[in-house]
Length: 215
Length: 286
Image (cartoon, rainbow over all chains, first blue to last red; front, side, top):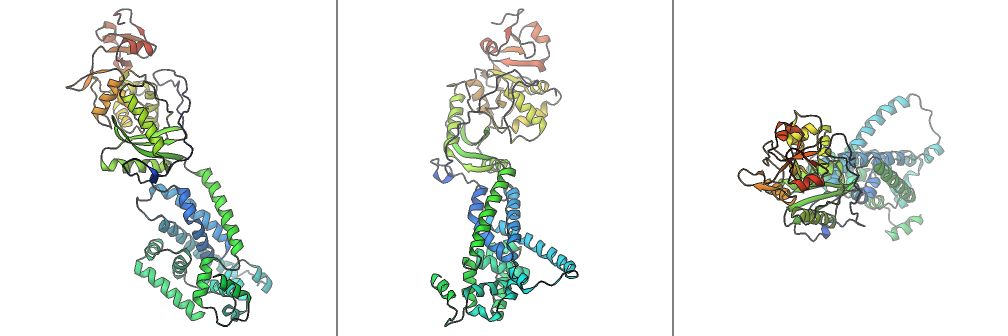
């Protein structure tokens, strides 16, 4: 904020200084510095968004199973990460941190969803096949498709896969998607899920085995 | 992958699609809703960027610069002006400074901008220029008291000095000289906000975040003479009453009787006159 001179508490009434903070056109990256010293700044947050936005959305779209939830989780994940960003330790893995937030939000949603489903199930009117097909929901769409077609047609194969993934336990689903869709390392997955690297590997391999068995 | 996509349109396949192929396709977005995904991503990014612009931290350009007179400096500039000048002496200084900056700003590297500020400060520190042209951004100042102290200090003329108690009195808190000391220590923009002009009651230098040598350098550049042991103001000082705007020699009976908390100390009669003070008719210091 610009200080306002001419305060009662001060030494003199002075004229307001013009803002002559000489603005350069484009900030040069720290990497282009001529100084001998190396200044390691945290990445600007917009760069974090640029680097990880697409991959996170791909993850969320598959993990949440439907696009409206994925969009909400996308916003929520990045906004939370943004507010916590200054407190991130130097050298911390931002990507792992991002997925830790996403993972948490997904788990909360799954837990709340289960609670809601129990309530709704008592009142629900069964949807027609058309309605289920039109629904933007992996499980619903898969139920409406020809079950054998996934071996012949890639599009159907992927839809079938999504339905199977939707039925995996939460941690296995997340671990598998982090590995196969987002391309996280096992160390990053471990950080994101809050488990050991061995456990992360186990989640992924168990998930893969289950899918194979049902393929 | 393109070959496989073509094959997917042909329903009579020779080999069944494996789980592995489906997983790869899932990862590469070749699923039925590829376009929908791009749209969702695009809209989500726009929406996120709008929200970040709304709630977000302002940007600051940060860089390290080496001043031949002031040493290594970390400089940060926001759209409002210089937000930080940090004397980088010990290993931890840089880290702490960046943490402090990162809490309030989104940081971008800009060595050139930092060097320009450092160059101006260097010239100032040897008296080559008596003007500092940058505006100042006090976002990093925490606490109302500190903010008031620093804002008041910012109006103190070049060539003038004040005591911790004097500054405290100037903001209506004459008992809080120690708190003023803390506020000076946490000044994020030294020199631009001239905490080097704040001294102990006996006009000794007392302390400075950048070390007493730098404090002495800056005071000399502003026209003060300094004695060595103890390190304090010396020479043809002139005492001024900041409210009455009259300046006296230290020997003036009027000055001796006056409330020291209302005093401001100038390097000489010229400096006092330039600040708009007029000479005392009793001791005639001019």
